[in-house]
Structures are given as C-alpha cells and as structure tokens.
Image (cartoon, rainbow, N blue to C red):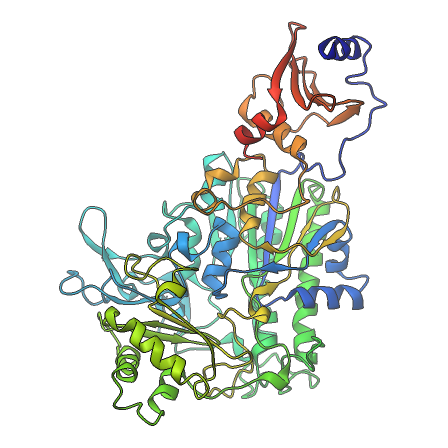
Length: 607
C-alpha cells in the first residue's frame, strides 16, 4: 500500500512539483567549501560578550545564522598543538600522539645524534627554534632539518623527525585531497606543517609566516605587531577565496578546506604590558601602547589592549565575509570560528606566579635530598638525551628518567601540594583513566600536575595568563558554525572541539570515518547541525554518482509523508517516507524500490 501511495504521488507529479518547499532549515547539502578559523585564546565568554556589545560586528553577523556552542571544550591539555589537532583530526593526544609543541618522546634522539646511537629519549621541539634563519635572525619560514630531533624511520634509517612524521593520525586536509579537494592553511610557525598529516602532502598551500623569531624580533611583545602578522595570513585567505594561492599567484580554485589562526587575542589576553620596551614601532596609540593587557574583571571585560585585538580579528572576519560574498560562494561556504585553546585565568585577581615548578620543588625543605625531588630536578636539568623533561605553564608535565619512580614522585608531590600550589597530581591508574599508559606510549608524561586555578608556573613579568592546562578558562572556547541556511541558536550541550573535524567532512558529503582518530575515538558530529536525512542524501550523491548527479544540483523537497530529491539528468528520485522510515528509490525504469530502513543507511553513510 505504501509503495502504491508513493507511486501515485510520483504519477501525480507531487515529487518534483515546483510548489514544494525545502525540507530542513539546516540542509547543508549545498556546502562546497569550509573556512575554519582558530582565534587562539577565544573563550565562549568572549564570543557572548563581543556579540552582545557589537550588534553590527562580523561576529554578530555570522552568529545570526549559526549554531553557537557555548559549552565547547578543547582537549584537557589545552595547548596549541593538541587544540588544533582536535579541530583537524577529530582526536586527542591518545590518537595523535602530541601533547605540546615542546614535549618529550622516549623513542627519538637529539638532533646532533645523526646515527641514532645509544639510549633513545629526547625532547621533541617543534617551535620557532627549528626554523631556518638568515644572518639577521629573521625566519625564512621553512624548517631547518638540522634542528629536528632524529628517529629511526620505517626502513631503520636515522632521519630528521619532521612534525608531520610525529603525528600518528591523518588530517581533514589529507581526507579532502583523497576526495578530490584542494586545501590550504596558514599558521604562526613552520612547525605547523604537521597539518600535512603522515603523508606529508595534506595541505596544498601552507603559509606559515613566523611570529616569534628565535634570537630576533618577537611580534608577540605587542598586540599591534601581532595583529600585523595575523593580517599577512588574512591577505592569504582573501587571495584563496579568489581562487589564487596565498601569495596572489594563479591557483587551482577555492580550497575545499582552508583557514588560519589568529594570535592577537591570545597575546592581548596574556601580555602584562603591551609593547613595554617599545620594540614594535607601529604600536603608538597611547590608549594601548605600554598599557596592561588581559581582562579588567572576572566577568571577562576586556582591557583596551584586548579590545584592540578582538576588534582586529572581527574586522578581518568581516573582510572574509565580504570576499566570500563578492565571489558568490558565501552561501556554499561553512564558516567555522573556534579556538585551539582558551587562556587562564580570566579574573586578574586570580593570577599567581610562584615560579617554575621544578624550582618550587627544589625549594622544599627536603628538595635537595628527597629521591622524588631529585628525580624531578634531574628531569628538569636534562638538556638532551634520555634523562627526562619537565614542561610547565599553567600545567606541569613530567617525564622521568626512571619510570619506576612515578608513583613515589606522585606521592611526594601530593604530600607537598599546598606548598607547590597543586590541585591534582595525575599518575599511575589515575593518569591512565584519561591518557594512554606512559609505559606503552612513548609520548605520554609519567606525571601531570594541574595547579590551583590561576597559578602559572613562571616568574615572568611579561605575561599574566597562560594555557595548556585543564581548567575551565583554558578549555572552554568559542565555537560557532555559520551558514546562511542555519537557523540561529545557542546550544549549551557539552561538546568537544574534536567534533568539528567530523562535522567538516560531514558537511562536505565525506564520511567522517575516513579520519583515523574519529574511528579510533568514536568522535561524533556536532549536535543539531545536520539532519540525518540530508546527511544520507548528500552521501548518496558521492557514493552513487551514476544515479544522483550532478552532486549538489537537487533540492531536498517535501510532499507529506515523503522527503526526497529529484535528479533530472538521470530521471531518478531518492527519498524517505515518514510512514515507515524507509528509503525509496525510483530510477529511469519507473520501478519504485524499497531500499530498507533509514537506520540501516545511516550506518553505511556514517550519519
């Protein structure tokens, strides 16, 4: 009877009638491009406050047709590497294998150890110090192989460990290319070439103007110079929207997936005094020059320095929106704004900078004699080789030379928690509740120390905030997903930024399970963004191009109880009936076929 009803509907022309209306407001089946923006440091609170105070801003415009996820969290270790990896792989360090841009691995060697001889174990440094520089200490924006740690590759050869060799999982860029797409990204260090993924070729147009020249000028001493560095990348995005390469040369067209990071907000949050030494010669506005950065209060009211950074980013976002509209692709672009990490603390009254973690341990009454304290001191003093490492910001990560000492060291730290400003010590079985075991995973720290909220393990007078830890201010970041077809709403359901990667592929009609981390960790798409029916239909266009083509040509329509798409080029219909929740297909032969339940196709399509 159901088949007969649908056949009658077809014969009467109900399927394909011009009077029918789109099925769902959030039908993202027409998305061809994804523009992903990381505004490093941007909290969910910053987004809410800025949009409320700036009704005509670009951020407000984007949010007017976006889902704003106000309870989005980064991976618990909220540093730039794991934060961006979440957005672009769909995974955490358990899958990707990277905890920090400067960390440690028990299976690599010092850069000078070109034969990979002796006991493995060394710091794994992927920051500005691995760049190639000219005589004036200006980065050439490429990596110097001689500065890289060494490892034994698959053939047993002692080779430089490039960042893309260090990541264990593929990226959205590799998946996009495997599906015929063109890709681009811009970021703050050449070390971000890990975005290429293990293949080393995921990003077609990678642009990494160094923001912090080792031994040279550091743009981050000033929010103005930082914003200027950001705008190098913004100009690259504008060129790419026009189908060019980032430097304005002839290109292959608009990238399927592209984007960049902004650094100005992060600097505006952290900096104690903007342009304190006057090194940024273009930073002359007396309202921000040599003025304090960060927030005025615990409610997230920005100082003028941070306000400048937020406005700079918003202006840039506006220029991207304009460029997309001028090219006629705004409607077919999914525009995502989020952050690799937050920043802690927001409230300036909470700032506590007692010193570096290992120094605090050494200053304890038995800090020079207790075996546990000595183990930390030895790891901290290790400059090269297999003797461990201590990394700290508003977190402390400890790799011990002797891993059998982990529990005794953790016990010692817990006993001295008050003096060391410790909130939580993670080791042993507690550590493995969240991370892989350090006994089997060469990258995982033996001990992770989360300090009391507001504590930064530093004595630096240059910064009053940091990131990298597990606190709410570190991990609760802004996230909005925008497209003109999306009905504006704010979702307070907890979500992870790793869900962005899965959602990007889903929006492009690509199965998110092509991401290895998504499969390994079971990462889901963001809630409320897709309707299941549109997801299946989008997938069908990719999976069965001979039946449903050209892809993106058909509009989802409704003639109750049916939701369907019609493809004139192949004279084919595909759709659903709400009467039995089954999928139906009618081809050029005129035969109506029941293809089974929607739930069965959901799994096949990865929806």
